[in-house]
Length: 291
Image (cartoon, rainbow, N blue to C red; front, side, top):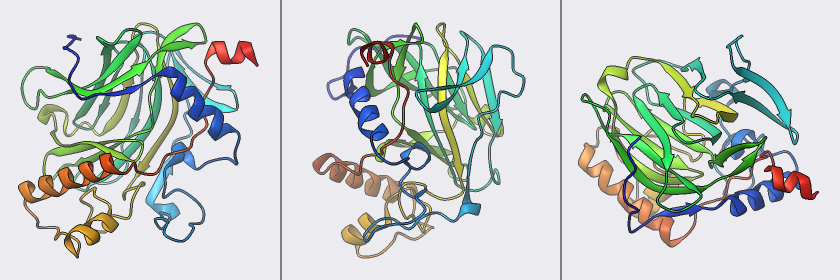
C-alpha cells in the first residue's frame, strides 16, 4: 500500500484510548453485539427502536476449516485469529439490489484488507508514529487507488503481534446508487464512496490479513440501519432529518441533495459527539501482564 502524507484533519485513536474503552465496556453488563445501538433487547426513552430479530444476523465466527484461521476466546471475547496473509470470508446477507449494512470489529496488522461487496478498506503505515491509517480503495472501475479516511490508529501488542484495534466499523452498501458509506462507531465518517464495479456482484465479506495477521472480534449483517432509525434507508438518522428538514427525505431524493444532508449531519456530529458504542474487546498484552 502507498503511504500518503498526514492530512490536516485527522481522527487519531491511540491504543490507550481503545484500552480505556475496553476496560469500561467490560466492567458493565454484556453489551449488544459490537455495541450496535439498535441490537439491544429493549430501548430506553429517546433510544432508537431495536431491530426485529429477523432483520439482522450475528455471525458465529466459525472457521469453516480455513487453513491458518483459528477460533478462540481471549478475555471473554470470541475471536477469529488469522495468521499473516490468510483469508476468511462470509457471503453477504440479503438481496444484491437492496441497501444493506455490514458491521465488524478488527484488530489488524499493516496491509490488512477488507472487501465487502464492492467496498474495500485497508490498513497501511501512518505518518503518525506507532500507528496505522485506515484507507479506502477509490479505484471504482480502474486500478487500485488507496485514499486516506483521516483515521490513524495506535498499535499495540496482542498475542505478540503488532495490531491496531479498530473501532466498530459499519458499511452501508447501496447497490442501486453504486455507492457506500462508512460509520466509525456511530459517527458517519464518509459517504457516497464509489463501489468498485468489478467487485459489486461479489457478495461476500472477506478479510485478508496483513503480515502479522488479524483478529476478527465480531461480524453483524443487517437489512436495516443497526445504529439509527432510518425508515427511508438513506443512512441518516431520522431524528436528525426531522429536526433539520421537518420531514424525512423522499426515497427518490437525488444524490446531490442526499450528499448535502449527509454533510450537515457530519458537521452536527462534530459539534456534538454521537452516542458511544460500548463493546467488549480483548486486552493488549501489556494490560494482561499488569492485571
